[in-house]
Image 1 (cartoon, one colour):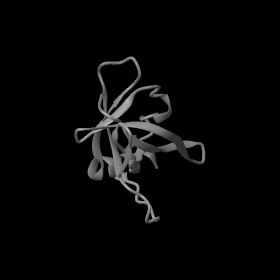
Image 2 (cartoon, helix red, strand yellow):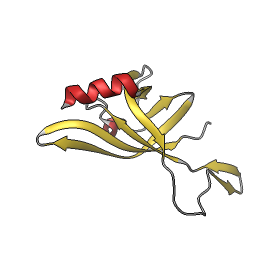
Image 3 (cartoon, rainbow, N blue to C red):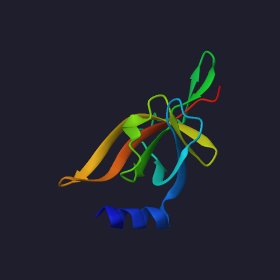
Length: 111
């Protein structure tokens, strides 16, 4: 199953770079990244605060078994000029085999 998932990622996925905490060089991987759409009408991509607008959009990430999204620490993911912090990550298994990683990402504010 893992081989089939890798084929799907290599053909249809996006190229992302994982930066683990304390490492300057990133690891290039393939994953699916999609914005998470909210059903409620009060959802806005940006939230006004006393210090200006803050992005609050969230993204879903599906990556290969080698991504280990729970081991980034204060690291981040980079794709298409945006950087993302991992809010939540779960490994997904089929039987005893780790098939892919599911992650909930948030756009990181640029310093």
